[in-house]
Amino acid sequence: MTIQTVTDAIRYVGVDDNTLALFENQYPVQPMGVSYNSYVILDEKIAVMDSVDARAAEEWLSNVARVLEGRSPDYLVVTHMEPDHSGSLMRLAQKYPEMKIVGNAKTFTMIQQFFGTGALSEDRMLEIGERDTLSLGLHRLRFLLAPMVHWPEVMAAYEEEEKILFSADAFGRFGSLERTARAPWAPQARRYYYNIVGKYGAQVQALLKKISALEIETICPLHGPMLTEDLGEYLRLYDLWSQWKPEKPEGILIAHASIHGNTAYASEALKSKLKGKGAQVTMCDLTATDLSYAVTSAFYCGKLVLACSTYDGGLFPPMKAFWDHLQTKRFRNRRIGLMENGSWAPAAARLMRVELEKMKELRLCETDVSLRGALNQTSEAQMDALVAELCAE
Image (cartoon, rainbow, N blue to C red):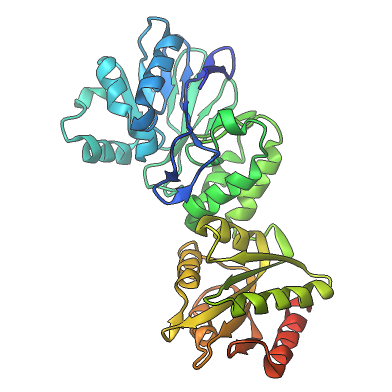
């Protein structure tokens, strides 16, 4: 990735990774890739803002050296210790032995866990806390702890002179800068948020409250593009997402998991009936759609229909995986309809209803559609009743 000028004194020295297939070994990021972002603040003292994944160490070290032009950095600020950001930390620390590492108490605990108890001498560790500052000369960093957004050691750093928020993983998105420079921010930021950060909405709300008093002109996340325009919209979406509120309250997602096609066919019939009533409907085949996209669609819409074949007396595994992930991310604030299928013992709706009733802030439709293979007069009537419930709000 080409070095970029953020401001006269700040450079982007991050690296694109266009070969990674699965982010965190589970989320597909091809063909878009991903970026590992790092920045250098050039002043009387020099601060490098985060390192990168070990996969990208050589290119990153070269970028940093080019920007330094023979100088040595005074600080490496570590806002997040996940290996895609800390993987090259010790490479820079070894190259510049006088450089101090800036982090909070939990940062240094993790450094010892990852790299060994003797990785850094105590005199190289500069521990900071909430609202502590670090002066570089004209520029000054103010630190805001952001635990569980989405790891316990996470913190943000606000540069007061140029009004830049170094936001760690907050406001990040999938996509290398080279390949997605002109792509809209929200689609992949939404998928990144709900799958990686989404469980920790309360903690994101706490961070949003802290930064609400700041005048921010640029947001520099650890993944994806630097944000300089429409910041109000990005903040609005993060506020919405972190309260588990739908972006499309009237939108209905039908997520189906079909073994032999009958449940999928019934889902299409339900879609047709809903659209006939003017509803906005999206379909998701859980046997063919990656889980991360399915989860994102569920959070995007205000209403969700779960249509599942019964399998060995339980849920068909693609549906179970989908629902388990929604539960992990504390899915809430939605209207839910259920449809089951089972030629000899339909049970999926009953099993899903038991789990749904345990969860907070979900409104279940009273009518369940129960199929025994294909649609029949009884299931058609149930489907009409479910449509009426979903369209009543």
